[in-house]
Length: 281
Image 1 (tube, rainbow, N blue to C red):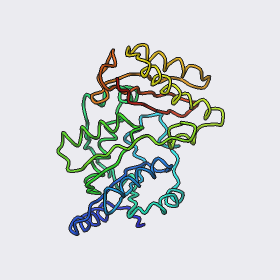
Image 2: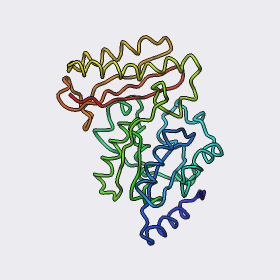
Image 3: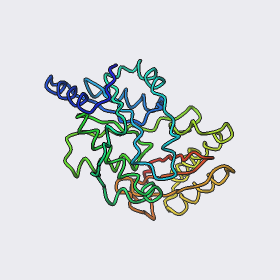
Image 4: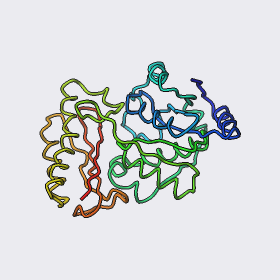
C-alpha cells in the first residue's frame, strides 16, 4: 500500500495505470475510517484493477463554527484498517497542496444541492463538489464509490458528473449499519454512551415510517410527523430536519406516489448525524 502526498506523483501513477489499460477505482474519504468506508473500498476492488483511497479533511465543506478543527484524524489507525482490504494507493495531500495560496476556483451544483443539508449548511456542497472534482482530475478514476448514507451528496456528485461530462462511473453503496441499526459515521466517536443510545432513534424513526408505508400510508405530512415523534423521544436529540423528498430530484412531495427519500439530520449532543431511507409506494 503506497502512500502519495503530492498531486504530481498521484497523477503520474494514474497516467501509468491508464497506459497499462488498468481500471482505477476510487474512494474519497475524510479519514477516521470505519467498516462503512472499508465496504466502499471492497466494492471498488470488485469493479477495478487498482484502488485509490484519498484521506483529506476538506476545509471548504465546513462552515464557520463547525467541527473542522476537531474532526477526528488518525492516519496510522486508518492505514492499519485498510491494510487487509488491499488498497493500492492512499492519497493524503496537505491542505496547502489542494488549496495553494491564491486558490479561487470552485465548482457549484444548483437546484439539487439547495434543500436539506444544503439549506442547513450553506456552502457545504460547493466545498464537496470542488474537492471531488479536483480529486477526479488528480486520481483519474474510471469508477468512484460513494456511500448512500450521504444521499444528497451522492445525487449532487452524480449531477456534477453528468453536467460536466466527467468520464467516471459513480457507484452508490448501501448504508452500512452497526448491529443495533446506527448508521456508521466517523462522527459517532463524539457520542457519549447515553448519546449513543439516543442516536438509535434516527434508525428507529426510519423503521417506523417504513412500517407505515408498508401499511398503506402515503401522506408525506403523516410520515414526516411520525419520524419527528420518534426523534422527539430523545432528551439529547435536536432535530435539524426531517423531510420527505423525491428520491431522484429532491423536490418536495406531498404524497408518496413515486419513490421518495425520507432524510433525517439531528444533533445528538455535539454530533450532527444524518440518516435516510428510500420509500417506494
